[in-house]
Image (tube, rainbow, N blue to C red):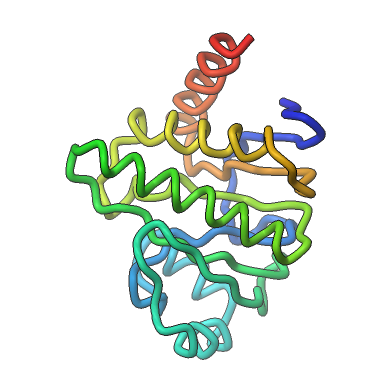
Length: 177
């Protein structure tokens, strides 16, 4: 799907294998690795990623920081911390901020392609059906502004996630027409 001049894609893929300028890491506050996507990215990038992350001083929820990609195809990793799900409206605000700040960092570093996982939907417990509209709306709103991004990928882990994001994306674009 095109939003302004940017392609927005939904892919069932291992984010660590994607050839994009940056992949987004659903990180924890320390940025020193963890489980799920975070652990997979750290393992695939190699020990240099951990060494660089140690210099960053952690990251607050909703914020984002950038590093090199090291052994990944992606040239950079944008680390963002999504909210631990609590069921309050503040969760959505923090999740949207994590997406926006990741996109902003990509633009500030003159990147043209970025891939996102479903931030906060793993160990942080955000229900996929609730996270999808927040993530997609934040991406679409950002792409409707001034951006150099040419390609944004949602890298999703299974068919169920693809189906949910596809359904929500169709709803969002239908209501915005």
